[in-house]
Image (cartoon, rainbow, N blue to C red; front, top):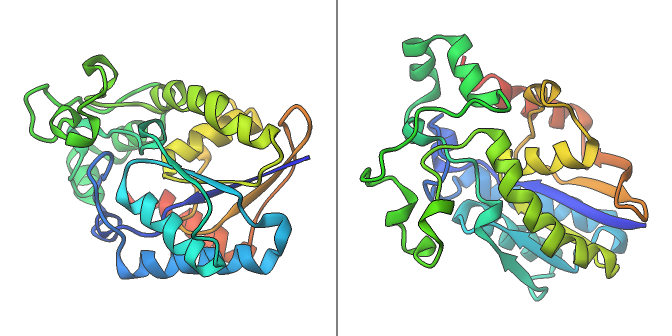
Amino acid sequence: MATLVLLRHGESTWNKENRFTGWFDADLSSTGEAEAAAAGALLAAEGPGAAPDVVHTSLQKRAIRTANLALDAMDRSWIPVRRHWRLNERHYGDLQGKNKKETTDQYGEEQVFVWRRSYDVPPPPLAPDDERHPRFDPRYADLPPDVLPGAECLKDVVGRVLPYWHDAVVPDLRAGRVVLVAAHGNSLRALVKHLEAISDADIAGLNIPTGIPRVYELDDRLEPVAARYLGDPAEAARKAEAVANQAR
C-alpha cells in the first residue's frame, strides 16, 4: 500500500482577481497563505501515515510556497522537495491575464467553458514574440523551445505530466515514501484523470478545491483503493463549486 497526497495551491493574487493565471507566476494571496498552512495542519492531524517523506511541485511560486507553508505547519520543512516544469499549471495562451467573467461576457459562457474545461480544445495561443510566452522566462531557458507551450488543453497537460509521474513520482511511491504533490488545478486534474480512469468527457466536471489535501491509498499496482479530502467534506464541495463558477 502506498500513500499519495495531492494539494492544489492556495488562492493566488490572480485567483483573487478572477484572472486566467496559467504560467504567470502569481504569488499567494493572504487567504492562500492561510489555506496552505491549514492544509499542513490537516495533514499533521492525520498522524504519521499522512506525513510526507518527499514533495514534488512545479516551478511556480504559488505551488512552491503552498508546499513550504504546509510543511512548516507540519514541522517537516526538512524533507526533500523536487521541482519540475511538468507540474506547472496549464498554459491558458492568449487568455492569460484576462478576467474570467469579462471573458465570458465577451465570448459567451459556452465558449469559455470549452476553453476552460474541454479535454482537447486549447484557447487561442500566444504568438512566439508575445512577452507572456514562456520562452522569455529565465526559469525555462534550458528547455528545448518545442516543449514550451503557447497554449494548452488538458490533453496537452496530461501528455506532459504523465512522464513525470512515471519517472519521478512512481519510484518514490514504490520505495514506500508518502508523497505530497503540491501543484495546480489542471496539473492535478491530469493526475486525477489518470489515477481514477476518468473519461475524456467526464473530466470536464472535475473541479479541485484550493488548499485542501486529497489523500489516496494506492494498491501494489498504484491504483486507488481509497481517496478522500481531509477536513469538512462540505467545505471541500463548496470550494470545488466556487472553482466551477469562476467564469459566471
